[in-house]
Image (cartoon, rainbow, N blue to C red; front, side, top):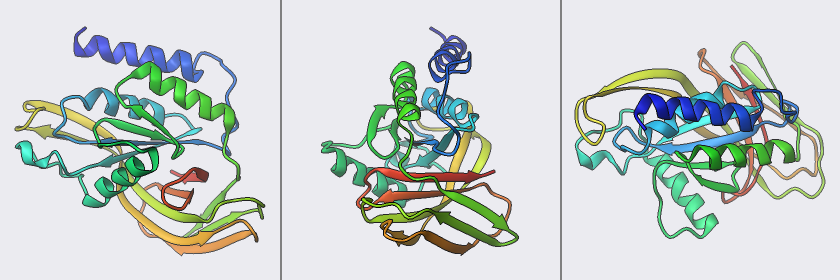
Length: 237
C-alpha cells in the first residue's frame, strides 16, 4: 500500500472505531490523553504522526507529541527533540516493565502501551479509555496571564503530580538527511514545555493558580507519581 493509501486507511479506521460515524462517546470533561513518542529521524513514525493529528482533532482526546533525541545520531537532528522526553519515555518503560524504548510508541492515559503506527490497536485502546473515563473532573480557566486549576475533593487517590504542558499545534519540516530524507512532514501537537507545578492527593479540593504567557495551547494533567495513571486532564486551545 502506498503512503496515500495508508493515510486513507488510517482515517477510515479512526473514523469507525473512535465514533466519527456516530458511536456514543464519553463526555468531554474526562478526555483521553494520548502521548506519542516520536522522532523526525524515524522512518516508522510518519504514520503515527498522522494518526496523532487525527486523534487531536477530537474534543475528547488530548494529543501530545513528545519528540525524543536518541535518533539524532543517524544523520538528522530532530529540531523538536528534548532529552526530558526521552527520560519520560524511559520512566514509562520502567512502569510497564518494558526492556527497551522504541518509536513510535503511544501511551494512553498513562497506563496503556501501544505501537503508534498500528491504527486498529491505537483506535481500540483509545475507545476503551473513552468508555472508562478519568476518575476526576478537572476545571481549568485562564484570565490574562493567570491559569486557575481546580478539582473536587476525591478520596482514595494516589499522590499525584500536576503538570502544565504547552504545545505548538502544527509545523511542517523539510528533512534532508536521515531515514526520512527528502520528505516534507507536518507534525502536530508538538510539546514545547512540560512543567511540574504542584502535588495533590485528593484529601482536599484542588485550587491552584499558575502564571502562563503567550497564545500556545495549555494542557493540565494530574498524574499519579512515578508516571502512573492519569487521574485528570484538561486543555485550553
